[in-house]
Length: 100
Figure 1: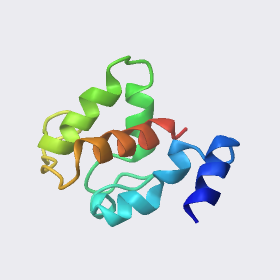
Figure 2: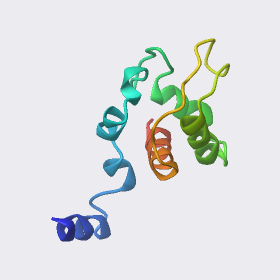
Figure 3: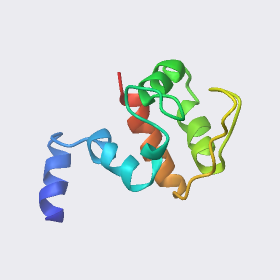
């Protein structure tokens, strides 16, 4: 199975966003507060992607927020720190930023 994934990835059939999809966000509990295209408790992922689209440091900045939490950018409800690794946070953020 790993060989199939490696070949598909090398052939360009799979990309990082495809691997870090909404399934990963669900598995990590992100979808309890966020949806792809509609505000829930937190902003829609597409709104986050639009807001940070032209910021060169967006991946690092947002991955840090995923890890540590934050407040005030999208309203009064704070985002709590999430139980993800720094690598998982970056993967999730890259997926979010890929949404149009």
